[in-house]
Length: 63
Image (cartoon, rainbow, N blue to C red):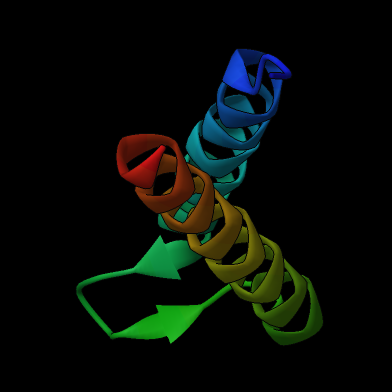
């Protein structure tokens, strides 16, 4: 049985870093973002990392 802790750790670090960067891009007073293209890329990467994190945790709990 292979060890999947490395994948979970990797995607958790990516989600934290990209989520923080996305948080800094949003101006909550005017509800706008500084750079739209970069914010979209951050959002896609964040959602990708969270998806794989949840999938890995579900598979780990089923085994």
